[in-house]
Structure formats: C-alpha cells, structure tokens
Length: 303
Image (tube, rainbow, N blue to C red; front, side):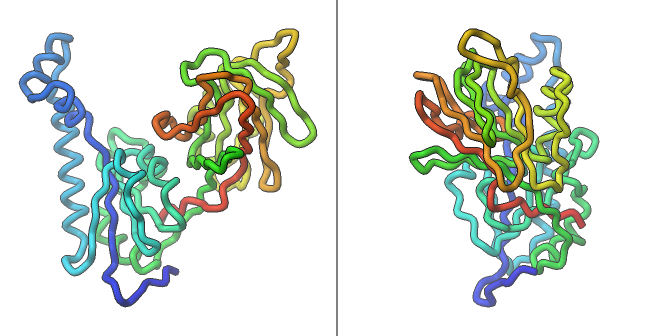
C-alpha cells in the first residue's frame, strides 16, 4: 500500500498523446485542407473525427472524476522525458497500450491505471478498463487499495553510464536497418554476427514484435510470459560468412544473466526501446551494451 505524505493532496497525472485527427491538422493546417487531402485519395475525415471525439469524451470523464481538492497534471507523450514525476503520483493513461510502454520507463514504482477510450479499436492489454471504471477505481488507486501486476522491464547499459529502459523490447542494430555487425555473447558462448538486428523482449513484449520474428523463423524458443522474470533474444536474418555465424540466434536471459553485445559498426549503430527511435542511444564501434532485467517493474493496476 502506498505511503502518502499528509502535507500534500494526492496528485493524479494523466498521460495522453495526440489523436490521429490532431496530427493530421498539425500537418495540413486546417480541417478543410486535411479533409481535401484525404478526399483526393478516396478517404474521408469523418472516421478520424469520430475517434477524436470519442477520445476527448473519455478524457473529460477522467478529468471530471478527480476531486477538486486533489492536484492534477496532464502530460503528452512527447513531453514525458521532461516531466518530473513525484513518488506518490497515481498515473492514469488514457489511450492505447503503447502509451503505457512510453511512460513506464520514467516511473519508479508509481501505479498505472490504464483507461481504454476506444474498446472497439484498442486491444487493451495494458489499458484494460473502460472509461466508466474511473469512478470506481480512482480512489482505491490513490489510496493503494488496488491489485497491481508487476511487469518486468528490460535494461541496456553502455560503458559510459547511459541507460535505456523498455517495457516491451530493446532493438540493437543499424538505424537504417541495413546490416548490423556486432559480437553477441551470453554465458560462455560468443559469436560474431551480421544481421538485421537483435530484439531483446520481456514477457509483455513477447506477444508483439518478438512473436512475429519467432513465427517467421520458426525459432524453437519459449518466449517469456508477462509475469516471468526472464528475457528472450531473437536475431533477425543472421547472415553466415567467413567471419560471421548463425548459431546463436535465439535464447533466454534469466534473472541472474545478461546479454552482451559489442558493436562493430563505425556509424549508424543504435539501441532503442519500444519502437521509439528518438530516445535511442548511439552504438558505435567498440561500444559494449549489457542487457538484462531492470531493477524496477511497471506496477499495472488490474483490479
């Protein structure tokens, strides 16, 4: 249960991102221009307008549920890296599953309540609750009277001290997705490789990108479940040559283990998490990335 300072009122932080309608308007300037652009391609803006209205209806419902004497903040996905979270914050994510992954790496034990504004559009694995649930869940969430599920995160550390965290997976490769060259080792086994990159997945990410790689390559590996303290790595399209091999293309990384990748790329090498390349780390020749389970887990409210 949370220990909350009595000197401050509770603070609820609402995390959102722009709707597709808002992004389209930012690109074209006006609704009329955006509508013309879509109509010239045989599409209509009405569908995006409907989804935009659904989202903001849900957002207003969430905001209205917060008592007037509580503190509140709203932060957009693009501003997460500059936002200062407080230890006692209750985080309410209104949006898609990916938005939970975006905010997870900035948290240190704060609980996350995921609200799905469009159950007919979103799967809702990490945002399992319809907006109507906010009235019943907000008070218990703030008071720590909820059931939470710990979701493991993956961490990459460079020798200069830079750290990258992700909820789903970390990608190691070339930023243009051309051949990535590196040396990969786990335990006592090491191999130099040339491939389309390496995915290191958690149990949460195992149903996404990693799963598609597993199916495509028929990799005989059991991907981790969402409640496991285990990672899995999968190499994409490893290329055999005189100097590179294809024997160490998938495997598990357990809690007391780490995966080590040494870059053999003069330029273009990168590590990024959860598909967000903008937050990636440069990975040039000779850099060593140590990848393992993060110390902190995401605390996801499930009931």
